[in-house]
Amino acid sequence: MLSFRGSCRTLTYAVVCCLIAATACKAPGRAAGNTSSLTAIAPAARDEANKGIDAFRNGMYDEAVAHFRKAVELDPSSILVRFYLGSALAQNVVPGLDTPENLKTAQQAIDVFTQVLEKAPHNANAMEQIAGIYFYIGKWDEAKAWQKKVLNEDAQDAEAAYTVGAIDWAQAHRNVLAAMTPAGIHDDGQGNVHAPAQVMAAINAKNAPLVAEGVTYLDHALQQRPYYDDAMAYLNLMYRRKADLDRGDKQAREQDLAMADDWMQKAAETRKLKEAHEVNDVGGGATSGDLEFDMIAPPPPPPPPPPPPPPPPPPQVTGKTNGGDNSGGIGSLFGNGSTPKVRATPPGRVNISAGVAVGMLIERTDPIYPPIAKAARVMGTVVLEITISKTGEVESLRVVSGPAMLQQAAMDAVKNWRYRPYLLNNEPIEVETTVNVIFTLGG
Image (cartoon, rainbow, N blue to C red; front, side, top):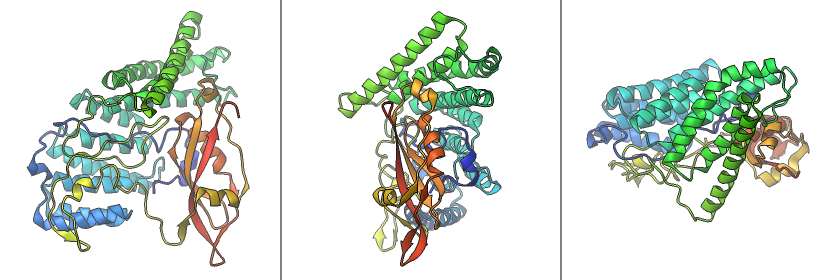
């Protein structure tokens, strides 16, 4: 499970654990040289590869890594097996955790995907994987650089363009908080006309290039996918950052805020149309092709990019494991549906329903509604997956879904909640559950 541990609790950015996780299927030819020679696996490596798939599906990622490493040793030429190895390693990367062990795991995964690129230099899928890992360990500039490489290979990749724009906003938002919080100022999302000029000057010096780049890439994402409501939502946020830049020009600031409101309205209307199945949100880069892989875990931020469509037909792999026919199993390993999204629950820990957890809650801290989210009229439910210790404390948590601007506020509140210990056979035991934190402007 991609959990929120240790130093993760000190994260200041709100979109970690949720941005670059889902990689949509791309147009044929993206992974240069998509031929049988790249997808074939030597007979000697098939058994290890299939064992790795079984371990992956059961959430046993360390075991999967061991099998895939062996498969690579047996068939060093197979790009497909290296993809599996890199993806299994990436599952062990904890977002935001900067311990040497976590960073080492991240680098190992990056190294494996780099080896893929040595054999297939134009493989955009490997580039996306590297971008996602860099995002998870907080190296946002590197993540953007790799997404731009993806766009060099496939200019129609709406998700890559969206990701660059979303990271630009996250960096700009972080700059605002870093300057305003020590000064005791709240971001009002309306251009911050009452903030001290010297504070805003420092913010704007850093944010001007981010805002310009972010708007450009989000516009590009919408050119590829006209109903990309997530990109619309981020344009709303980005134009509020642009209002900071134009705060000295009332007319320009008001135009920025009008644009923000307009994009917010368009995003809401588009979501309703999509929910009613009145529009089909498929744009450039959404056609099935070969060598398609999901990134490391949950589908992304506030609002998350859409999950990937069904995978293309898998390559045929002969041989059986666990008494069952496993032909074609490798191709579906990272496809939408059968791929395990979280680790299997370890021994000594059980899963309980959200309803049971509510009955155990004895101390609750209400979340603080972020002023910028209020100004942007961002509402919604943040879903958290949490681990409750034997003593009833929240010892780890991660975001499953929810608006990015609200995620950090939800985590800051829930990490202080206290529960009655859960008893199994009259002994306290760790439990995992989910928590829904609801933000409404009327509440």
